[in-house]
Image (cartoon, rainbow, N blue to C red; front, side):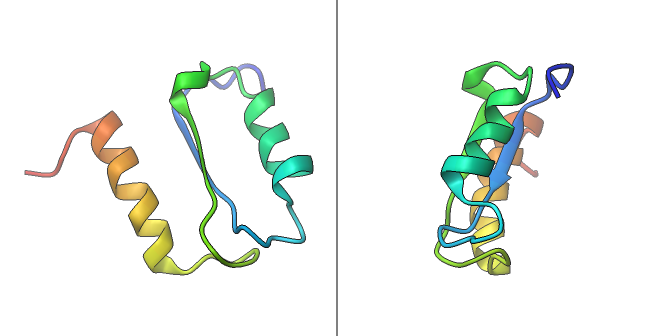
Length: 71
C-alpha cells in the first residue's frame, strides 16, 4: 500500500466489529503512502454498514476539497 499516494477518505463505522479503528482502520491509513494531511478517517455512528446519509456528509466536503465544488 505504500505506493498509493492519492488523497484518501476512509469511512469506518464507530462500532464496526469487523474492522475496528485501532486494529484495522488506523493501520490501513498508516500503510498508505499518502501524506498525512491528505488522509481522513471519519467514524459515524453505526457498524460495518454505514448509513448513506453519513457517507454523503463525509464524502461531499472531501470531494469538494480535492476536486472542487460542483457549480
